[in-house]
Length: 168
Image (cartoon, rainbow, N blue to C red):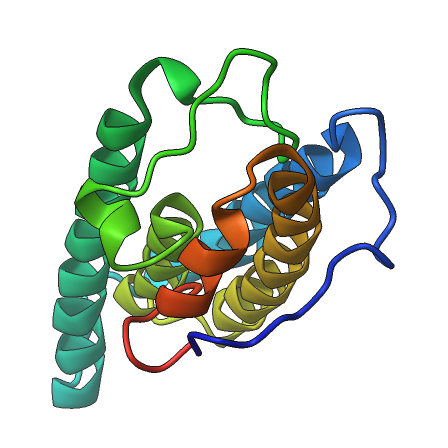
């Protein structure tokens, strides 16, 4: 929610630029693929509930992919996989960053939840929720670095939601 000051300073850096946060994220994404593999045998769905889950998954995957694309496009040359900003990077507060502080992370969560729904895999949904928690912590650590680097970040954080406009 806008206005919350959830300091990530107490969270470990996991490397000079936060490499461990990226490694953890990649491992969880890989794990989502592994645990969802058995669900491929159940495709296409055989029940109405299965088809509704599949359809919801398609919508969430599309929305997540669009949000990731928009976030990457808005960052342009400022894009880095690491949570610590690079040395010549500028703070981007336009495009999707005008509404949420972490559109790429939000998009990745939508993709993961959508994938779990699409393949109708409860274990993949559990991993997607773990990934959401990991990205929430990663965003807090990232924001601690951003506050140090950009004088205007605190005001931006106060007026902009972390992942979901008007909610969180």
